[in-house]
Amino acid sequence: MRLKPSDSSAKPLIPKLSSELSVNREKRNNLTNGEVEGVINDHSLVPSSEEEYALQPRLYLETGVGDVQPERLRGLSKWVTESEHSQSEPYLLPHSRRRRSWLWNQFFVIEEYRGPEPVLIGRLHTDMDKGDGSTKYMLEGEGVGSVFVIDSKTGNIHVTKSLDREEKDQYRLVATATDRETGRALEPSSEFIIRVQDINDNPPVFPNEPYVAMVPEMANIGTSIIQVTARDADDPTYGNSARLVYAITHGQDFFSVDPQTGILRTAVPDMDRETQDEYLVVLQAKDMGGHLGGLSGTTTVTVRLSDVNDNPPHFRRSAWSFSVSELAAPGVEVGRLTATDPDLGENAQLEFTILDTEEAEIFNVTGRDKEAVIVLNKILDYETRNSYTFSVEVTNPIVDPRYIRKGPFKDQATVRVMVLNADEPPRFSQALYHLDVSENCPPVCSVGRVYAVDPDTGQSTNIRYSIDPQSDPEALFRIASDTGFINTVMELDREQEQWHNITVIATQRDNPNLVSRVVVAIETLDQNDNAPELDRQYTTSVCDSSAPGQVRSCFVFAFIFDG
Image (tube, helix red, strand yellow):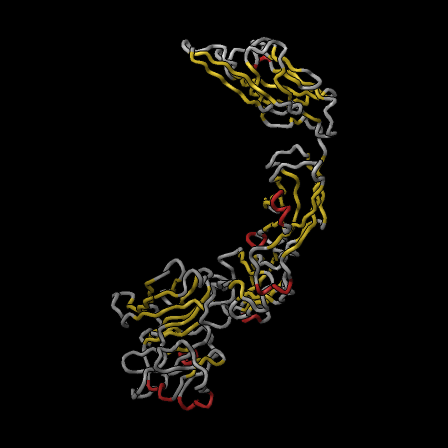
C-alpha cells in the first residue's frame, strides 16, 4: 500500500534513469531514520546511494506534493510516482539491502495552509487494488474524522482544516486496506506520522516584561545592566523562524545590546543621576535572524541610575548672621545654616563642626536633615560682649575614593551672632544678704542695707525697694524704698526667735514689670537679758561702721558674776 502523489506528471524513478536522479551527500534531510539519509530536490526524494533501490514494498504511500517515500515491506522496495501506477508492472530489483533506506512512514503538512478545503495531502494505495472498488481503505488514529478523512474507495487523504504546529506538531495514523465484502485485510496495517511543518507565524514575545533595572551612575562603558530574553513559539529546529536577534530602537545613544544574548549594557561613561535619573529603552527581538520578512516584538526596559557619592556638600551661603537676646537661656536655638548635597542616602549624610574653640564652648551645632542648628550653650551678657564670629564646616563622613578628584568633600561658612541688649531686671549686689540686730534694740533700730542697680545703665536711682509681706507677716521690719536701708519696727527678742528671713523686692521704676528678689537673713543678737538664777551675766557688743549694704562686724563681751 502506498500514499500516492496527486501529480500525474512525475516520471518513473528506475535505475536505468539514474541520470535523472541527483545525489547530494553534503545536504541531509531530517526525514530519515538516522541510518541512511536522502535529499529533497525539486519536490522529488532522491536516495542517498544506489543501494537503496534494493527495497520494493507492495504497500506504499505517495505524498500529495510529489515526494516519494518507499516503505520497507515483504523484502521488496521500489520508488513510485503516479505515472508509474498508470504504466505496466514497475521495475523490480532483488532484495540485497545493506542499509535501511528512507524512513517512509512520515510526511509533512504545512501549518496554516489556507487552500480550498478539504485539502488533498496524499493517497493510500496497494498493489492488490484491482480498481474495481472492492478495496476499502481506512484510517485510524489521532485526528481521524475531525482533522483527516479518507476516501475509502480511492484512498485519498484530505485534511479538513488549517493546522497549527504550535498546538500540535504531529499526528500518528494507522493505514489499513481490506476487502470490502469480506473485511479481510489485504495488507498488514501500517503506522505512519503526519508532521505539521512550521511556518514563521509567531512573532517573538517577552514573557517577563516590563523590565526595570538599576545601574550605578558614572558606570564604565560596557557595564552589564540586564539580560532580556524573548520567546518564539515557532520550531527552533526548522529554518530560522525562531532564531532571534536583538536591537535597540530607542535609547541607543546611551545603551547597547548584544544581538545574540540580549544583554543590555551602558554605552557612555558619564551618565549623571543628578542630571537624569531614569531612562526608557525600547528593545526589539526579530526572528529569521533579523533578515527581511522576519517578525518582531518589542519591550521596554526602565533603567534607573543608582546614586554614588560624586557630589561634595556646599553651604547655600558663605556668610550667615543671627541675633540672640542676652536673656536667652542655654539650649535656645540661635539660627540654622542650610547645606546642599544632591546625592542620596548615606552619600548625602552631612556632619557640622564649629572650628573656633572659644565659640564652640558658648555655642553648639547639631545636624538636622541638611541644616546646621546653632544652639546656645552659656548665658550671654551684652555688657560684656555683644557679638561673636566663628566658622562652621560641613563634611561628608563617607567619601568614595573613586571620585575624590571631585572634592574636597567639605565646605565652610562664617557665622556672626549679635547679642541683643535686653531691658534687664535690677541686679542685687549679693545673691544672699546676712544682717544682724541686737535684741531689745528700740525702734527704729537700723539692721543694714541691700543694694541693687539697673544692669543696663549701671545706676540705682531708678530702683524702688520693698519687703514681700508674705515673708514678714508680723511686719517687724521696714525698708527705705529709695535707699534699701532696713530697720526694725519693734524690739526683737532673741529667746522668742533668733532668725528672721525676709524677701526684698527691687523694682525698676520706669518698667514695673522688671522685678528682682533677694533673701535677707537677719539674726537677733543676744543681750543677756535673762541672767542665770545664781549668777549674773553682763554682755556688751561693739560693732564697726560698715558701708551701706554690707554686713557689720560685731564683738560681744560677756561678764558673769557669781552672786
